[in-house]
Length: 137
Image 1 (cartoon, rainbow, N blue to C red):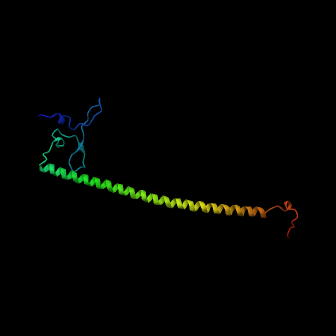
Image 2 (image 1 turned 90 degrees about the vertical axis):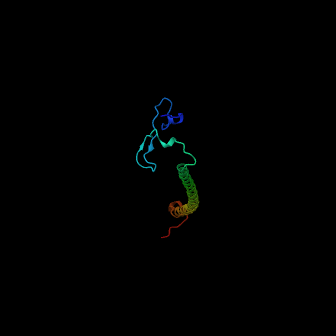
Image 3 (image 1 turned 135 degrees about the vertical axis):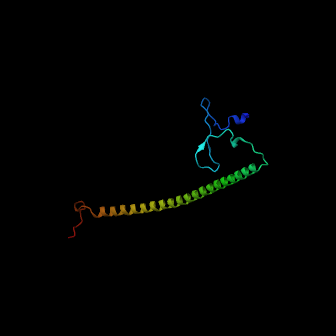
């Protein structure tokens, strides 16, 4: 059984210097799901396929579809994010306008309250402090 140098370390993860190498886990079936097991020495992962073979063509086709799907998903996510940003900007503008309106309303109500309080204070002066005024009674 001859192994080329490139396949001798096949299935081993990149380990830190001084740490033991651990086998890489791969799915039992190509469809996914199930538990993962270490790859066998006869794994198809390291095999080079002839560019003219049917298996190569099928793998390329599946890969191209996966890439296309991934790019569409990424583009959709970017569009969704942009839409959300625009919604939040609009909501922020509405809230800022509401803050301005409520601030003005608060200012008007404060002024009314202070004016009313001042009028009450003027009308409720003790009689002894205002000489020359007659009591109505």
